[in-house]
Length: 165
Image (cartoon, rainbow, N blue to C red; front, side, top):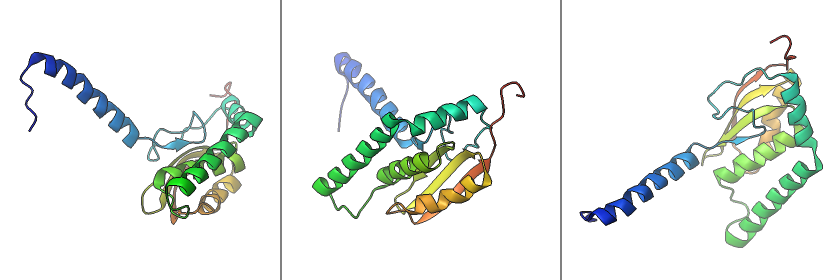
């Protein structure tokens, strides 16, 4: 049992305890997002984006730098799996990242948040521009090893010009 009766020990313990709570809380709430404009939670509805945001998202997703980052991320994940674990077993964090990367690459105008659980359930929320993009989400996600079920909370919300808003 930890006894903290000395004031000096308390001064060191309390900041450490608060920092731990913040770090663990932030990690537990994270979702992978295809865009900075994507919802912070897969349970939050996506908002109708404006055209400038969608154009910026598409340019970023198609940029050589972003494509190189995605390729590097996937290579690093494969190397870690080969070195430290079973390459056929993919945890929920890796599933989230791989689904996000694939959606960002194949549906660059989408603004989506991705969450996965340990059973392979992937929940995706946000907005897409067309019904064809909406219909493509689940098949794209199912291409990722470890994905068992895809739950969608996605709406078709074509971007609108700022002048109309």
